[in-house]
Image 1 (cartoon, rainbow, N blue to C red):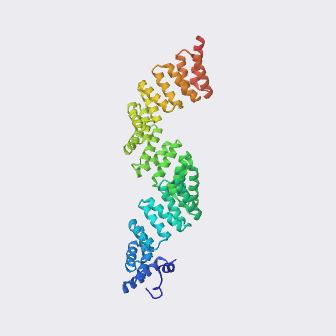
Image 2: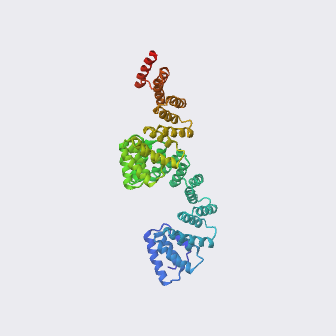
Image 3: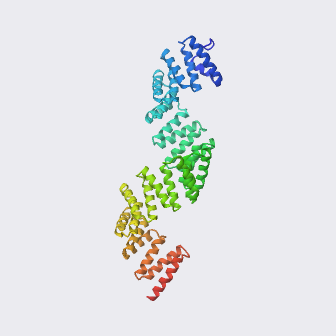
Length: 467
């Protein structure tokens, strides 16, 4: 190295190189290489060249040069730190941690070393070790936004979303223009079920960085969950403008369109999403639901079957396949799906209700009533349970218990028109047209102009007069 630079300490050399461009750095590397050839024991030259290699992105050479510095001067803390940084860039996190350990032993109290070692621990999945190092880094430098941000990320990975929110909030206080901190705080809020607050953070992230695709997508998902389907659709379209291959955004767009009743339009993004990720159980389930809405039950069943092959314990999809099988009149197969759900979840109300109807459609009314009895036990305040049992009783000719169950359904839900219809029919079969008329009157009040109720009421009036 030339005489004017040979006494510079590493920190001074770095300050001298601030603002220097790549070409000048390459020229400096060449000069340092000549100096090293002349004096292979020049630790400062190796240190400077190693640092420059790191700045130029040549991390393997940075590792080599800093290793040579450590051989020449085992107490050079900056060499351990620089080699650790290079190892980290090469994703050799274990080697990086070893160097950070050595640097911390040689010079305790370096916030950056603890912070960087924590980041390496996080990359290796040692989240507890990462948090411990971020804790120390924050104690040593309480105003370092990056340490709070990374600890917040780690808490999020650990499922401690409240602490993640707290750390991201502190990072935002220290560095308000950090869009990533708003994004990840929004994700933490979403995981806490505070969807509206999450959306506010995604809004803030997008104000800071308009083309922040992750924030667009996350806001779309949040609005989808709030059933703000049109707004969600706008966000998914924007995310797809930024990345047309965003599988999640394609799926979200399909779900939003389907939720808006635009089932034909929904198929294109769902199909495209599956082209990119053929074994996505979530997308297959979404397409299955959309196909069922289009009354393409055979195709829906194909999608559900693929999902179940990927995850046999997906109760939601087992139920959807069962109901689609029922729509095709394949009740025995449907019952098998409901059986599987009940085996996995013995208190699944929906499965008992659906299986009860399937048994009734097969004429197996005793099994239907058994399912409905269990349904009433599980959900005694659910009018659907009594309606279902009343239907089974009526089909097997047990009019009195059927009337009682339809009455319970109506008591729990006075606007239950179907139970009133069924009870009115039974009253007339039992020779009580006056009671039937009362039900018809209530149906007409709830649904003025209901042609069926008006017609049947006239007939019940005629029956009452004859009597």
